Amino acid sequence: MINLKHITIANYATESGKTTSLNLSYQTFGKPLHTAPIILVNHALTGNSNVIGENGWWNDIIGENKCIDTNEYTILSFNILGNGYDNKAENIIENYKDFTARDIAKLFALAIEELKIQHLFAVIGGSVGGGIAWELAALKPRLIEHLIPIATDWKSTDWVIANCHIQDALLNNSSQPLVDARMHAMTLYRTPESLTQKFDRTKKDESFFNIESWLSYHGNALNDRFQVAAYKLMNQVLRTIDITRDRNDFLDVASKIESDIHIITINSDLFFKADENWNTFVELKGKKENVNIHEIKSIHGHDAFLIEFDQLARFLKPIFKAEVSTSKKKLEQQVA
Image (tube, rainbow, N blue to C red; front, side, top):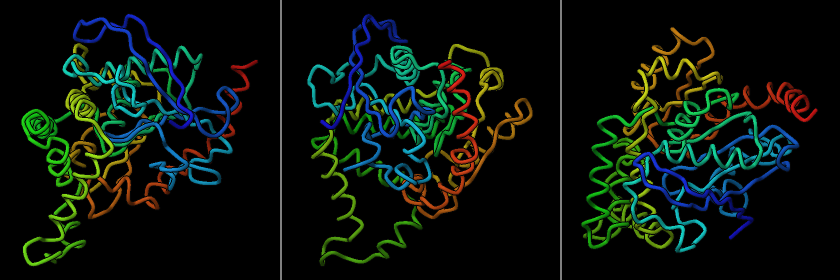
Protein backbone atom coordinates (compact mmCIF):
# COMPACT_ATOMS: atom_id res chain seq x y z
CA MET A 1 0.00 0.00 0.00
CA ILE A 2 1.31 3.45 -0.97
CA ASN A 3 2.85 5.47 1.90
CA LEU A 4 0.30 4.37 4.49
CA LYS A 5 1.05 5.46 8.04
CA HIS A 6 -0.71 4.15 11.14
CA ILE A 7 -1.90 5.40 14.50
CA THR A 8 -3.08 2.98 17.20
CA ILE A 9 -5.91 4.25 19.38
CA ALA A 10 -6.14 2.11 22.51
CA ASN A 11 -9.26 1.53 24.59
CA TYR A 12 -11.58 3.67 22.52
CA ALA A 13 -15.13 3.79 23.90
CA THR A 14 -17.69 3.99 21.11
CA GLU A 15 -20.86 6.06 21.29
CA SER A 16 -22.70 2.76 21.80
CA GLY A 17 -20.62 1.97 24.89
CA LYS A 18 -18.26 -0.67 23.49
CA THR A 19 -14.52 -0.43 24.24
CA THR A 20 -11.97 -1.48 21.67
CA SER A 21 -8.46 -0.73 20.38
CA LEU A 22 -8.27 0.46 16.79
CA ASN A 23 -5.74 1.09 14.08
CA LEU A 24 -6.24 4.21 11.96
CA SER A 25 -4.31 4.55 8.71
CA TYR A 26 -3.59 7.79 6.86
CA GLN A 27 -1.57 9.44 4.12
CA THR A 28 -0.01 12.86 3.69
CA PHE A 29 0.78 14.75 0.50
CA GLY A 30 2.46 18.02 -0.38
CA LYS A 31 4.53 19.80 2.28
CA PRO A 32 5.69 17.82 5.32
CA LEU A 33 3.53 18.01 8.44
CA HIS A 34 4.05 21.16 10.55
CA THR A 35 5.81 23.06 7.74
CA ALA A 36 2.69 24.46 6.04
CA PRO A 37 -1.03 24.96 6.62
CA ILE A 38 -2.79 21.59 6.93
CA ILE A 39 -5.88 20.56 4.98
CA LEU A 40 -7.78 17.46 6.10
CA VAL A 41 -9.54 15.75 3.18
CA ASN A 42 -12.29 13.28 4.09
CA HIS A 43 -13.09 10.63 1.51
CA ALA A 44 -16.55 9.54 0.33
CA LEU A 45 -18.33 6.23 0.88
CA THR A 46 -16.20 3.86 -1.21
CA GLY A 47 -13.15 6.11 -1.31
CA ASN A 48 -9.90 6.07 0.64
CA SER A 49 -6.94 8.20 1.70
CA ASN A 50 -5.30 8.07 -1.74
CA VAL A 51 -6.34 11.61 -2.60
CA ILE A 52 -3.80 12.33 -5.37
CA GLY A 53 -1.16 10.57 -7.45
CA GLU A 54 -1.63 7.20 -9.09
CA ASN A 55 -5.31 6.24 -8.74
CA GLY A 56 -5.90 9.44 -6.74
CA TRP A 57 -9.59 10.28 -6.72
CA TRP A 58 -9.19 14.09 -6.53
CA ASN A 59 -6.29 14.77 -8.87
CA ASP A 60 -8.41 17.35 -10.70
CA ILE A 61 -8.62 19.58 -7.62
CA ILE A 62 -5.48 18.87 -5.58
CA GLY A 63 -1.84 18.81 -6.74
CA GLU A 64 1.07 20.96 -7.79
CA ASN A 65 -0.17 24.35 -9.06
CA LYS A 66 -3.78 23.16 -8.91
CA CYS A 67 -6.75 24.66 -7.06
CA ILE A 68 -5.44 23.25 -3.77
CA ASP A 69 -1.71 23.57 -4.34
CA THR A 70 0.52 20.92 -2.77
CA ASN A 71 3.41 23.39 -3.07
CA GLU A 72 1.66 25.50 -0.44
CA TYR A 73 -0.22 23.05 1.79
CA THR A 74 0.04 19.77 3.64
CA ILE A 75 -2.76 17.40 2.67
CA LEU A 76 -3.79 14.91 5.37
CA SER A 77 -6.31 12.13 4.75
CA PHE A 78 -7.41 9.38 7.10
CA ASN A 79 -8.98 6.14 6.01
CA ILE A 80 -12.38 5.93 7.65
CA LEU A 81 -12.21 3.07 10.10
CA GLY A 82 -12.80 -0.32 8.51
CA ASN A 83 -12.87 0.85 4.87
CA GLY A 84 -10.50 -2.00 4.01
CA TYR A 85 -7.90 0.10 2.19
CA ASP A 86 -4.97 -1.35 4.14
CA ASN A 87 -6.13 -4.92 3.36
CA LYS A 88 -5.48 -6.02 6.95
CA ALA A 89 -8.02 -8.52 8.23
CA GLU A 90 -7.69 -7.24 11.79
CA ASN A 91 -8.88 -3.79 10.67
CA ILE A 92 -12.16 -5.03 9.20
CA ILE A 93 -15.08 -4.15 11.48
CA GLU A 94 -17.81 -6.79 11.64
CA ASN A 95 -19.82 -5.18 14.45
CA TYR A 96 -20.57 -2.15 12.27
CA LYS A 97 -23.71 -1.12 14.17
CA ASP A 98 -21.51 -0.18 17.13
CA PHE A 99 -20.14 2.86 15.27
CA THR A 100 -21.57 6.23 14.24
CA ALA A 101 -20.37 9.20 12.20
CA ARG A 102 -19.49 10.91 15.48
CA ASP A 103 -17.25 7.97 16.42
CA ILE A 104 -15.32 8.50 13.20
CA ALA A 105 -14.97 12.21 13.96
CA LYS A 106 -13.78 11.40 17.49
CA LEU A 107 -11.19 8.98 16.13
CA PHE A 108 -9.98 11.62 13.68
CA ALA A 109 -9.75 14.12 16.54
CA LEU A 110 -7.68 11.67 18.62
CA ALA A 111 -5.38 11.02 15.67
CA ILE A 112 -4.99 14.76 15.09
CA GLU A 113 -3.95 15.17 18.72
CA GLU A 114 -1.50 12.25 18.35
CA LEU A 115 0.04 14.04 15.36
CA LYS A 116 0.36 17.17 17.52
CA ILE A 117 -1.80 19.23 15.17
CA GLN A 118 -3.36 22.20 16.94
CA HIS A 119 -4.97 23.89 13.94
CA LEU A 120 -6.38 22.82 10.59
CA PHE A 121 -6.51 25.39 7.83
CA ALA A 122 -9.41 23.51 6.28
CA VAL A 123 -11.45 20.34 6.45
CA ILE A 124 -13.10 19.39 3.18
CA GLY A 125 -15.13 16.36 2.19
CA GLY A 126 -17.90 15.26 -0.11
CA SER A 127 -20.97 13.20 0.79
CA VAL A 128 -20.32 11.11 3.93
CA GLY A 129 -16.86 12.73 4.16
CA GLY A 130 -18.53 16.12 4.44
CA GLY A 131 -20.87 14.79 7.12
CA ILE A 132 -17.84 13.70 9.14
CA ALA A 133 -16.38 17.18 8.60
CA TRP A 134 -19.52 18.66 10.20
CA GLU A 135 -19.21 16.19 13.10
CA LEU A 136 -15.54 17.08 13.65
CA ALA A 137 -16.31 20.81 13.63
CA ALA A 138 -19.07 20.34 16.21
CA LEU A 139 -16.75 18.22 18.33
CA LYS A 140 -13.80 20.66 18.07
CA PRO A 141 -15.38 24.05 17.32
CA ARG A 142 -12.06 25.95 17.42
CA LEU A 143 -9.88 23.50 15.48
CA ILE A 144 -10.80 24.32 11.88
CA GLU A 145 -10.34 27.62 10.06
CA HIS A 146 -12.43 26.69 7.00
CA LEU A 147 -15.13 24.03 7.10
CA ILE A 148 -16.09 22.94 3.56
CA PRO A 149 -18.86 20.31 3.44
CA ILE A 150 -19.75 19.34 -0.15
CA ALA A 151 -22.88 17.52 -1.34
CA THR A 152 -23.77 16.60 2.23
CA ASP A 153 -25.54 17.87 5.33
CA TRP A 154 -25.10 18.18 9.08
CA LYS A 155 -27.66 15.40 9.50
CA SER A 156 -28.92 12.36 7.65
CA THR A 157 -32.45 13.18 6.54
CA ASP A 158 -35.28 10.66 6.54
CA TRP A 159 -34.65 10.21 2.81
CA VAL A 160 -30.97 9.37 3.35
CA ILE A 161 -31.82 7.04 6.26
CA ALA A 162 -34.48 5.31 4.16
CA ASN A 163 -32.02 4.58 1.37
CA CYS A 164 -29.34 3.48 3.84
CA HIS A 165 -31.92 1.04 5.21
CA ILE A 166 -32.42 -0.39 1.71
CA GLN A 167 -28.64 -0.57 1.25
CA ASP A 168 -28.28 -2.43 4.55
CA ALA A 169 -30.97 -4.91 3.50
CA LEU A 170 -29.20 -5.55 0.19
CA LEU A 171 -25.83 -5.96 1.92
CA ASN A 172 -27.23 -8.48 4.38
CA ASN A 173 -29.70 -10.40 2.21
CA SER A 174 -28.56 -10.35 -1.40
CA SER A 175 -26.70 -13.25 -3.03
CA GLN A 176 -24.39 -10.63 -4.58
CA PRO A 177 -24.48 -7.89 -1.94
CA LEU A 178 -21.81 -5.51 -3.24
CA VAL A 179 -23.05 -5.65 -6.81
CA ASP A 180 -26.70 -5.07 -5.93
CA ALA A 181 -26.05 -2.38 -3.30
CA ARG A 182 -23.78 -0.49 -5.69
CA MET A 183 -26.28 -0.62 -8.55
CA HIS A 184 -28.99 0.76 -6.27
CA ALA A 185 -26.65 3.48 -5.01
CA MET A 186 -25.69 4.59 -8.53
CA THR A 187 -29.33 5.45 -9.27
CA LEU A 188 -29.22 7.83 -6.28
CA TYR A 189 -25.89 9.40 -7.25
CA ARG A 190 -27.12 10.46 -10.71
CA THR A 191 -30.38 11.90 -12.04
CA PRO A 192 -32.88 10.75 -14.68
CA GLU A 193 -31.68 13.62 -16.89
CA SER A 194 -28.04 12.60 -16.51
CA LEU A 195 -28.82 9.01 -17.50
CA THR A 196 -30.93 10.13 -20.45
CA GLN A 197 -28.12 12.36 -21.69
CA LYS A 198 -25.61 9.52 -21.36
CA PHE A 199 -27.64 6.60 -22.74
CA ASP A 200 -30.86 7.82 -24.40
CA ARG A 201 -32.39 4.32 -24.31
CA THR A 202 -29.63 2.89 -26.51
CA LYS A 203 -28.94 -0.84 -26.41
CA LYS A 204 -25.77 -2.85 -25.98
CA ASP A 205 -27.48 -5.73 -27.78
CA GLU A 206 -31.02 -6.80 -28.54
CA SER A 207 -31.81 -7.76 -24.95
CA PHE A 208 -29.60 -5.43 -22.90
CA PHE A 209 -29.84 -1.65 -22.56
CA ASN A 210 -26.63 0.37 -22.13
CA ILE A 211 -27.91 1.75 -18.82
CA GLU A 212 -28.19 -1.84 -17.55
CA SER A 213 -24.67 -2.59 -18.77
CA TRP A 214 -23.36 0.55 -17.02
CA LEU A 215 -25.00 -0.35 -13.72
CA SER A 216 -23.68 -3.92 -13.92
CA TYR A 217 -20.20 -2.61 -14.68
CA HIS A 218 -20.17 -0.37 -11.60
CA GLY A 219 -21.54 -3.15 -9.41
CA ASN A 220 -18.93 -5.64 -10.58
CA ALA A 221 -16.11 -3.07 -10.39
CA LEU A 222 -16.89 -2.36 -6.73
CA ASN A 223 -17.14 -6.09 -6.06
CA ASP A 224 -13.54 -6.45 -7.31
CA ARG A 225 -12.06 -3.77 -5.04
CA PHE A 226 -14.24 -3.47 -1.93
CA GLN A 227 -15.42 -5.66 0.94
CA VAL A 228 -18.94 -6.25 2.20
CA ALA A 229 -17.98 -5.48 5.81
CA ALA A 230 -16.47 -2.16 4.72
CA TYR A 231 -19.61 -1.18 2.80
CA LYS A 232 -21.83 -2.07 5.78
CA LEU A 233 -19.81 0.14 8.10
CA MET A 234 -19.63 3.06 5.66
CA ASN A 235 -23.38 2.84 5.13
CA GLN A 236 -23.88 2.88 8.91
CA VAL A 237 -21.68 5.98 9.19
CA LEU A 238 -23.72 7.67 6.47
CA ARG A 239 -27.06 6.98 8.18
CA THR A 240 -25.88 8.30 11.58
CA ILE A 241 -24.68 11.82 10.66
CA ASP A 242 -26.27 14.19 13.18
CA ILE A 243 -24.36 16.93 15.02
CA THR A 244 -27.34 17.54 17.33
CA ARG A 245 -27.76 14.03 18.76
CA ASP A 246 -27.60 14.19 22.58
CA ARG A 247 -26.83 17.90 22.29
CA ASN A 248 -28.96 21.00 21.87
CA ASP A 249 -30.69 22.13 18.67
CA PHE A 250 -28.87 22.79 15.39
CA LEU A 251 -28.48 26.54 15.81
CA ASP A 252 -27.02 26.19 19.28
CA VAL A 253 -24.48 23.57 18.16
CA ALA A 254 -23.55 25.07 14.79
CA SER A 255 -23.27 28.67 15.98
CA LYS A 256 -20.51 27.59 18.37
CA ILE A 257 -18.38 26.41 15.43
CA GLU A 258 -15.81 29.18 14.96
CA SER A 259 -14.82 28.08 11.45
CA ASP A 260 -15.72 29.99 8.32
CA ILE A 261 -18.32 27.62 6.87
CA HIS A 262 -18.51 27.20 3.10
CA ILE A 263 -21.47 24.97 2.18
CA ILE A 264 -21.28 23.63 -1.37
CA THR A 265 -24.50 22.10 -2.62
CA ILE A 266 -25.65 20.72 -5.97
CA ASN A 267 -28.91 21.92 -7.52
CA SER A 268 -29.80 18.45 -8.87
CA ASP A 269 -28.61 16.33 -5.94
CA LEU A 270 -31.26 13.68 -5.29
CA PHE A 271 -29.51 12.37 -2.18
CA PHE A 272 -28.47 15.35 -0.06
CA LYS A 273 -31.05 17.81 -1.37
CA ALA A 274 -30.06 21.40 -2.15
CA ASP A 275 -33.15 22.75 -0.35
CA GLU A 276 -31.88 21.25 2.92
CA ASN A 277 -28.54 23.03 2.49
CA TRP A 278 -30.20 26.35 1.66
CA ASN A 279 -32.41 26.02 4.74
CA THR A 280 -29.29 25.36 6.82
CA PHE A 281 -27.59 28.42 5.36
CA VAL A 282 -30.54 30.76 5.92
CA GLU A 283 -31.08 29.50 9.47
CA LEU A 284 -27.41 29.69 10.43
CA LYS A 285 -26.74 33.03 8.74
CA GLY A 286 -29.04 34.68 11.27
CA LYS A 287 -26.72 33.55 14.09
CA LYS A 288 -23.31 33.38 12.45
CA GLU A 289 -21.91 35.88 9.98
CA ASN A 290 -19.07 33.79 8.51
CA VAL A 291 -21.18 31.23 6.68
CA ASN A 292 -21.45 31.04 2.89
CA ILE A 293 -23.15 28.81 0.34
CA HIS A 294 -22.33 27.96 -3.27
CA GLU A 295 -24.39 25.85 -5.64
CA ILE A 296 -23.00 23.65 -8.41
CA LYS A 297 -25.29 23.70 -11.44
CA SER A 298 -25.36 20.29 -13.07
CA ILE A 299 -27.69 17.60 -14.41
CA HIS A 300 -25.48 14.92 -12.88
CA GLY A 301 -26.85 14.98 -9.34
CA HIS A 302 -24.93 13.92 -6.25
CA ASP A 303 -21.87 12.80 -8.22
CA ALA A 304 -21.43 16.29 -9.69
CA PHE A 305 -18.79 17.10 -7.05
CA LEU A 306 -16.65 14.44 -8.77
CA ILE A 307 -17.55 15.67 -12.27
CA GLU A 308 -17.98 19.46 -12.32
CA PHE A 309 -14.40 20.30 -11.38
CA ASP A 310 -14.36 23.75 -13.00
CA GLN A 311 -17.31 24.94 -10.95
CA LEU A 312 -15.96 23.41 -7.76
CA ALA A 313 -12.54 24.98 -8.31
CA ARG A 314 -14.15 28.38 -8.85
CA PHE A 315 -15.76 28.17 -5.40
CA LEU A 316 -12.62 26.85 -3.70
CA LYS A 317 -9.93 29.09 -5.20
CA PRO A 318 -10.77 32.20 -3.14
CA ILE A 319 -10.34 30.14 0.04
CA PHE A 320 -7.09 28.45 -0.90
CA LYS A 321 -5.38 31.34 -2.72
CA ALA A 322 -6.25 34.50 -0.83
CA GLU A 323 -5.87 32.97 2.62
CA VAL A 324 -2.62 31.05 2.33
CA SER A 325 -0.34 33.91 3.42
CA THR A 326 -2.51 34.62 6.48
CA SER A 327 -2.47 30.97 7.46
CA LYS A 328 1.31 30.80 7.06
CA LYS A 329 1.66 33.69 9.51
CA LYS A 330 -0.53 31.83 12.04
CA LEU A 331 1.59 28.71 11.57
CA GLU A 332 4.79 30.68 12.18
CA GLN A 333 3.32 32.16 15.36
CA GLN A 334 2.38 28.66 16.62
CA VAL A 335 5.87 27.28 15.90
CA ALA A 336 7.49 30.29 17.55
